[in-house]
Length: 112
Length: 112
Image (cartoon, each protein chain N blue to C red):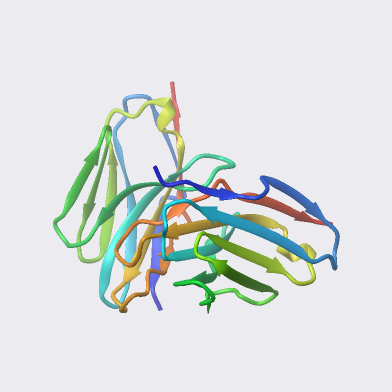
């Protein structure tokens, strides 16, 4: 079974802090994704990566950056957290196009 | 721009009362349509992928179908454990791009 793990289930940070969310997959998947999920807005893509050190902006990249130094690990960085970044953050991975994405359990981030 | 609209937003059923969830989509060249189930506070769990109009897939009480404009998730004789949010997503034919566009989901509640 594919396993996607995220570093924290719940996280509380203060406005202005730098926040790191980490995601690890164990199936040698090429593609990895970061989404945020908000009530009434659904899942929105922040960034994705096709390969190590490769990254592409999704639909809402503002205020975020990413890092993929190893194939199995994809990190989401909030350079200076703001209250409007309070959300559920979901990581996913897939073997490639046409294949299903496997999701992690999510990190519920609260910025106060 | 790809668009996915799911209806109704919420559905309440009595145990055993069959129904269908709708996913209407607009995409320039559909590569695949994906259905996911999401339980509260958890990441989405993959259910089905459909690739071409007329295709059908089944899993236990769930059956997914696809036309050129929409997909249905039919639930036959639902049980309370089928209560969850069901997400639909589309993927476009663009090379190696495995990006998905998600609908906002349908929250299903099944009463015993």
